[in-house]
Image (tube, rainbow, N blue to C red):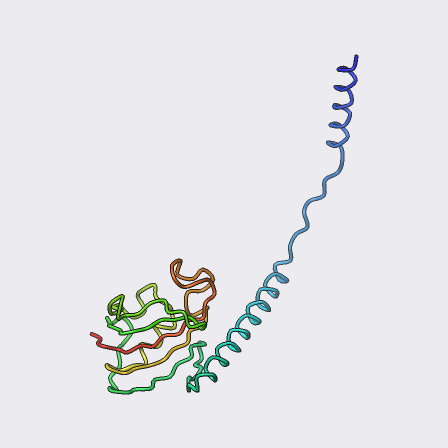
Length: 173
């Protein structure tokens, strides 16, 4: 008798829950999502620029901000002939984070050789090399959206890192 009562009670609960009206999930407003993402992105870019500006001021550097968001100072000019997109370049470099942590260095890792615009290096690095002549030296501060982005390089550079380069263009061809 007890088993029969339990089964009937179970069937009654199951049939009641199946009869309840289920409302479809609310549809998200794509426009609001885009606006929220745009606001968040603008906030992050503003905060990154504040951190970069503070870093530059503490070191008395004279970096300029270009249209793309790259901060650059070419402090030693040797040659006016500059490479073109698609050319192979060799760079001497040091890459660090804003907190001073050294990540990569050509003295240990060897020269950085790549084809401009046809590689997986930060967009800011590709962009800056086009502004240098052979033997020129520059400082770069590259915000996350021109560097390694949301994920970092999956090795030494963390997510959303602002990176600092000291570079010298050794050669191009």
